[in-house]
Image 1 (cartoon, rainbow, N blue to C red):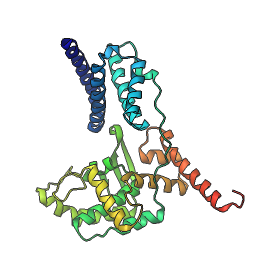
Image 2: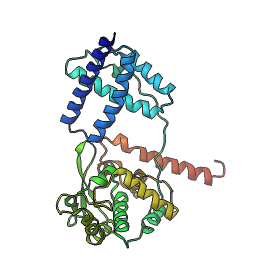
Image 3: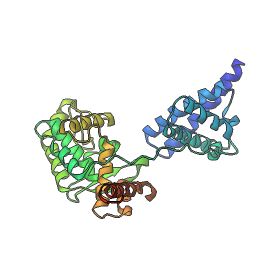
Image 4: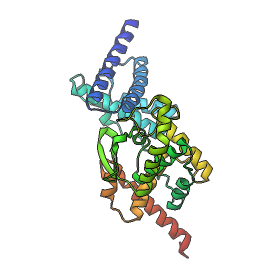
Length: 308
């Protein structure tokens, strides 16, 4: 019995290693590979305990696992993410001839609660950015960072990955490497460019000096020790400034991205243009912003119409 269990564990390890090789070959980000690996290792442990090797998993097994996750208190969004990882795993097995079908394709994704993205008003976005001083290197950095996040609709990961050469002053645009290593060029407004210029002139050299900073392809935004920031650093600093400004406290960097898209839509930009600026693979991902606009109209109607 122990030998069979070891055999199954070995089979799962090989399957996971094969998927990781596939993801690496497709240039998936390290973050994606880590997330898939963590979710799939937990499933593999569950499957081994149930006496199942990769080739013995069918749609019923996956439905049982999703039910198990629900019983453990997992949100539908968490179950959906784990199911996406399992579909990728069995797609890899099928592609390499180790499985006849992908059982994940026959399992319905758990329905997620429909939530509209949090959006700051244009006035609140301006209040937040104007509340960040520009005296110390860290203040200059934060002002530049969040001006860019709002001006260009950047994800936190895209902010911390931005390199010096990606800021194109003459063209007034950024070169952004988004999800799936897809590159896009995003226009930058005057205020954001000015904030970046001030940071690079007065703030970044002092931060870079903490680590013997070198010029070239280094990250734009540095920590107080002169190292590359993490996305958690970005979230923490934004929480600090929203609290101090008294605006949308605890807002995430994604709230600035959502605000960017919503304010463009309010200003008359079409969905196709917003899709390109956000780096969405399909316009369906961008259509959520029309729901934000619809929700605002319904709210205005409910407040204003005498027979609403």
